Figure 1 (cartoon, rainbow, N blue to C red):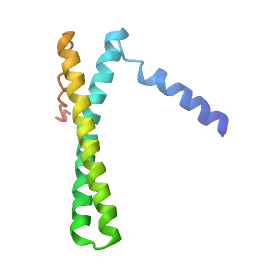
Figure 2: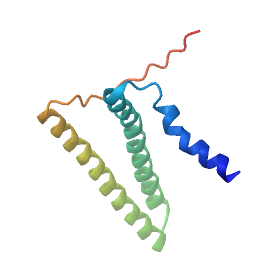
Figure 3: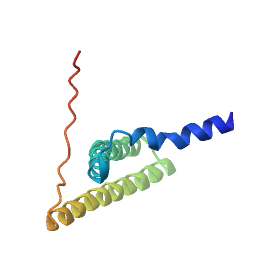
Length: 110
Protein backbone atom coordinates (compact mmCIF):
# COMPACT_ATOMS: atom_id res chain seq x y z
CA UNK A 1 0.00 0.00 0.00
CA UNK A 2 2.88 2.39 0.78
CA UNK A 3 4.40 1.74 -2.66
CA UNK A 4 1.12 2.49 -4.40
CA UNK A 5 0.65 5.68 -2.40
CA UNK A 6 4.23 6.79 -3.09
CA UNK A 7 3.90 6.06 -6.80
CA UNK A 8 0.60 7.92 -7.05
CA UNK A 9 2.05 10.95 -5.23
CA UNK A 10 5.06 10.89 -7.53
CA UNK A 11 2.76 10.96 -10.56
CA UNK A 12 0.71 13.97 -9.43
CA UNK A 13 3.09 16.58 -10.91
CA UNK A 14 3.26 14.70 -14.20
CA UNK A 15 -0.52 14.62 -14.46
CA UNK A 16 -1.10 18.18 -13.33
CA UNK A 17 1.53 19.65 -15.67
CA UNK A 18 0.56 17.44 -18.62
CA UNK A 19 -1.55 20.15 -20.28
CA UNK A 20 0.89 23.02 -19.62
CA UNK A 21 2.66 24.37 -22.66
CA UNK A 22 6.22 25.22 -21.66
CA UNK A 23 7.43 27.76 -19.12
CA UNK A 24 4.71 30.30 -19.94
CA UNK A 25 2.07 27.75 -18.98
CA UNK A 26 3.74 27.15 -15.62
CA UNK A 27 3.90 30.89 -14.93
CA UNK A 28 0.23 31.24 -15.86
CA UNK A 29 -0.71 28.32 -13.59
CA UNK A 30 1.18 29.80 -10.63
CA UNK A 31 -0.36 33.22 -11.28
CA UNK A 32 -3.86 31.70 -11.38
CA UNK A 33 -3.29 29.79 -8.16
CA UNK A 34 -2.01 32.87 -6.30
CA UNK A 35 -4.88 34.89 -7.74
CA UNK A 36 -7.32 32.45 -6.17
CA UNK A 37 -5.51 31.69 -2.92
CA UNK A 38 -4.45 35.18 -1.81
CA UNK A 39 -7.96 36.65 -1.43
CA UNK A 40 -8.99 33.51 0.46
CA UNK A 41 -6.08 33.80 2.89
CA UNK A 42 -6.72 37.53 3.35
CA UNK A 43 -10.38 36.80 4.08
CA UNK A 44 -9.39 34.20 6.67
CA UNK A 45 -7.11 36.75 8.36
CA UNK A 46 -9.96 39.28 8.54
CA UNK A 47 -12.27 36.61 9.99
CA UNK A 48 -9.61 35.76 12.60
CA UNK A 49 -9.35 39.43 13.60
CA UNK A 50 -13.13 39.87 13.84
CA UNK A 51 -13.44 36.64 15.84
CA UNK A 52 -10.81 37.84 18.31
CA UNK A 53 -12.56 41.23 18.52
CA UNK A 54 -15.86 39.56 19.41
CA UNK A 55 -14.03 37.36 21.90
CA UNK A 56 -12.43 40.47 23.46
CA UNK A 57 -15.80 42.19 23.83
CA UNK A 58 -17.51 39.18 25.44
CA UNK A 59 -14.79 37.97 27.85
CA UNK A 60 -13.41 39.31 31.10
CA UNK A 61 -10.17 38.99 33.03
CA UNK A 62 -7.33 36.89 31.68
CA UNK A 63 -9.36 35.67 28.71
CA UNK A 64 -9.75 39.31 27.69
CA UNK A 65 -5.97 39.75 27.72
CA UNK A 66 -5.56 36.69 25.47
CA UNK A 67 -8.18 38.05 23.08
CA UNK A 68 -6.39 41.43 23.02
CA UNK A 69 -3.13 39.68 22.12
CA UNK A 70 -4.93 37.80 19.33
CA UNK A 71 -6.33 41.09 18.01
CA UNK A 72 -2.86 42.62 17.96
CA UNK A 73 -1.46 39.63 16.08
CA UNK A 74 -4.42 39.79 13.69
CA UNK A 75 -3.61 43.40 12.86
CA UNK A 76 0.09 42.54 12.43
CA UNK A 77 -0.78 39.64 10.10
CA UNK A 78 -3.11 41.81 8.01
CA UNK A 79 -0.50 44.58 7.80
CA UNK A 80 2.24 42.19 6.67
CA UNK A 81 0.01 40.49 4.10
CA UNK A 82 -1.18 43.75 2.53
CA UNK A 83 2.35 45.22 2.62
CA UNK A 84 3.89 42.22 0.87
CA UNK A 85 1.09 42.22 -1.69
CA UNK A 86 1.75 45.92 -2.33
CA UNK A 87 5.51 45.39 -2.63
CA UNK A 88 4.97 42.59 -5.13
CA UNK A 89 2.76 44.91 -7.20
CA UNK A 90 5.35 47.69 -7.04
CA UNK A 91 8.08 45.27 -8.13
CA UNK A 92 5.86 43.94 -10.90
CA UNK A 93 5.11 47.45 -12.16
CA UNK A 94 8.81 48.32 -12.03
CA UNK A 95 9.81 45.45 -14.32
CA UNK A 96 6.56 45.55 -16.37
CA UNK A 97 5.10 42.25 -15.20
CA UNK A 98 1.39 41.47 -15.36
CA UNK A 99 0.31 41.52 -11.70
CA UNK A 100 -3.43 41.61 -12.30
CA UNK A 101 -5.56 39.12 -10.44
CA UNK A 102 -7.14 36.70 -12.88
CA UNK A 103 -10.89 36.28 -12.88
CA UNK A 104 -12.53 32.89 -12.67
CA UNK A 105 -15.29 32.03 -15.10
CA UNK A 106 -17.74 29.93 -13.10
CA UNK A 107 -20.14 29.45 -16.01
CA UNK A 108 -21.05 25.80 -16.52
CA UNK A 109 -21.48 24.72 -20.11
CA UNK A 110 -23.17 21.53 -21.19
